[in-house]
Length: 340
Image 1 (tube, one colour):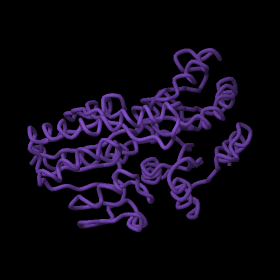
Image 2 (cartoon, helix red, strand yellow; image 1 turned 90 degrees about the vertical axis):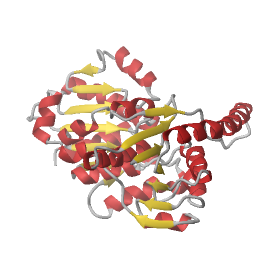
Image 3 (tube, one colour; image 1 turned 135 degrees about the vertical axis):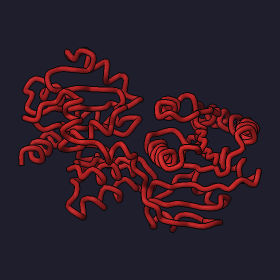
Image 4 (cartoon, helix red, strand yellow; image 1 turned 60 degrees about the horizontal axis):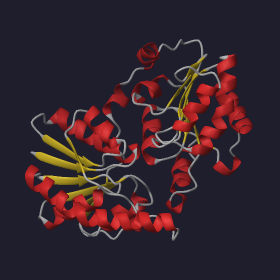
């Protein structure tokens, strides 16, 4: 059997696809896999790192603005869309997959559309309660649609079959052991560990709020703390270096650009602070971690807020809206949640 996966842009799209592919590989070792993504996003690193073959196309999304830079970007996007069709057709024709599976991100669009034209079985997975524009378009064309939550069905015009599958979580997360993970990280058991991140790309408001907290925490060492500034947050790494952090470390605090070993870090953590993307929440739920959730207010239909409230309403998390976010409030919450 040959399976082609198309996904990219953020870890929220990529990790569920990797979870599914990894599980199939375990159950059916003879299966051949190919991932299609872009060369300038994290799939170019995460997919080969997971041991899967990877090919790239050049694609981007549209910007909802009429500024000169946005118009220029959108014209380039149109050109890339036109060119991507023939590239996708060649990759698909050469690989000859039995099924093409899309997990979201702009790259899924042209790949799945070419697969439909070639008469190859197709399916997509939607991670959020409010679907992205790519999956909204593809739902009208593909053979099967898989949903994390049933509410997403209300926002889709579905041509084929539809099923609620939940959101796949990587097997290594479920297998990770707290004691072994702490040992691997060199973290003692006498202090709690805070894990914080703003998604794979990072979140500037969270980085800003965490900056003074991490400086104080590095001096006092009341708890261990691992923080990711995200792939778009290199400027924050420089600021931490200027504040006395050496290679991202000071005292009991470690600052990284991206967390490659999320299974180890989350297993070792006592509390998780971050956005409320569907992928992150599924991992937090699967590992039973206490959480402080700061939903992004910039996403369609404010879906991260509703994602977070699903945990909050079950006393499984605490929500802090970005409009209320400040270093003092976040520090007080951490103190309260850690030292209950």
